[in-house]
Amino acid sequence: MLKPNINRGNDSKTLVKHILKASENIFHVIGINIPPEWLMTDMTVAQLRVLLLLHTEGKSRMSSIAGTLGIAVSTATGIIDNLVKKELVTRSADAEDRRVVICGLSPKGQEVINSIWIYGQLQMKNLLDGLSPEQLEKAKEVADMLLVNAKTHTNSTDAVNEIA
Image (cartoon, rainbow, N blue to C red; front, side, top):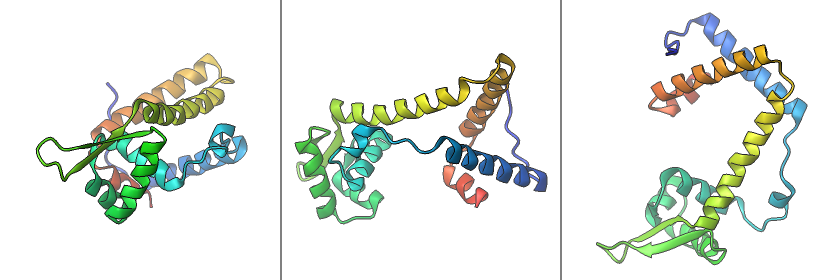
């Protein structure tokens, strides 16, 4: 099994900066393509943030949604109301305390989120399509190393702060 390199020296920091710059350059070359259906949607950024939060956190209390997004509960309620009307989110009362509102993704909401990931996978597939079998093997090894490294980091905030 591949093991991540936890000890980072100056050479590693330089390499990480180089990799991040290369990644940035890749996005400049391929461009950021937004599916046309996303440009025609009537979904707001705030609504998308709620959908992403519910996808990552699962069913959540209205107060937790508001707290995580740094908005007032009344604002979160308005966003959720609109998502419920669009059938992207379900809302129910907590069985133990009917004053507590629990929100979750509906099947239609899950489809919306899945379409984002599928689109990302298509872009990655397009990047890989022109590589030779040897290059694909190297890419697979790197992907495996990144996965192992991701599994060893329990707090992604530390990794983000380390890059900056």
